[in-house]
Amino acid sequence: MPIASDSPKVGILLANTGSPDDPTPKGVRAFLRDMLTDHRLVRHVNRVVWAIVLRLFILPHRGVTSSERYRKVWTDEGSPLMVTSARLVQRIQRAFDEEGASVTVAMGMNYGNPSIAQGLAELRAAGAERVVVLPLYPQSALSTTGSTKDRVARALRKLRWNVGCQVIDNYHDHPTYVKALAASIKHAGFDPASSDRLIFSFHAVPVPDIEQGDQYELQTGATSIAVATELGLERRRWTIGYQSRFQKYCEWLTPSTVDVVARYAETGEGRVFFVCPGFSTDCLETHYDVFFEIKPVFDQRAYLTGRSGDEAAFVYVPCLGKTNAHVRVLTDVLRPYVGGER
Image 1 (cartoon, rainbow, N blue to C red):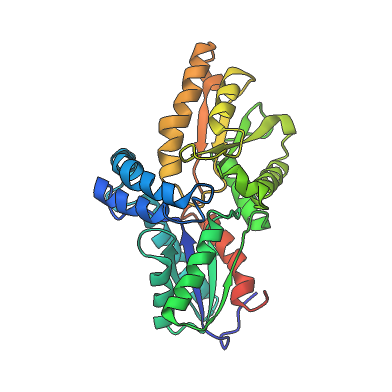
Image 2: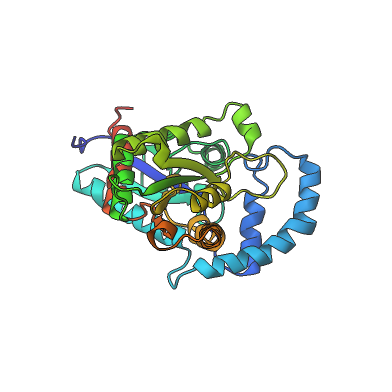
């Protein structure tokens, strides 16, 4: 539905986790310091103890090891997440311009640059009369969307900008999103009529968050069921795992993706397709964790059990990223908010 051109000018902020400015130990340490002092992300440890451990042990060590990981995925244009995010801003701006909407689109990251505050300042300078924030986390979690909400509220106070602001909590079951995921899986070669199997892998979150009411586990399950239903899959053909745990300071949501992948490599028939529906764009957790930590486990277990050919095939399904399908997903999610219907 077209959006009335005389509507108040809307500022759209696309939010995500962020990335270091560069893949050097210094750049990565600065990024990790910002991230690992966020109480939303590190909620279940003593803050004083954590501050000491962070300064003396984690930052010196992880600054080096994580920079090595980032260098493996860095491109000539920069961080994959940031490059794709910038293109999404341009494409969503163009999509709403073509609809005649009075909209300005910017991006802001929970950690690193541009920050949430910088993105909001850009929207204010562009004359936005109300703001819609879309965290690019299809499934909401206290440690991701919750952090975005905190930072938006803090930035608006700091900017002294009294503007109407809506933060979209999630879009885990939006029909356009579900259909786009199913189509991307098929595009990668998945055949619902064959013996192909499918692993949905989501970022792990702390179990204490779930116990305190976080809806993340329910939403990841709902997304997986919806996509599997769209593909017409029997329950035995797909499963869920949780990846990329950070440290061991608390219990993390299970089953571990690594354990799921190992089991799938050892049992069953057909190729294994691997999709990460919770990541809107490919990033360190997909480019590095999947190919340098998860897939090697699959390959090793398949080899040890004597599987070969298609039975040992691990097929990664890229994130929606800057595809036309993803632009449609995000504009469809945003449109009711831009038009004032929500």
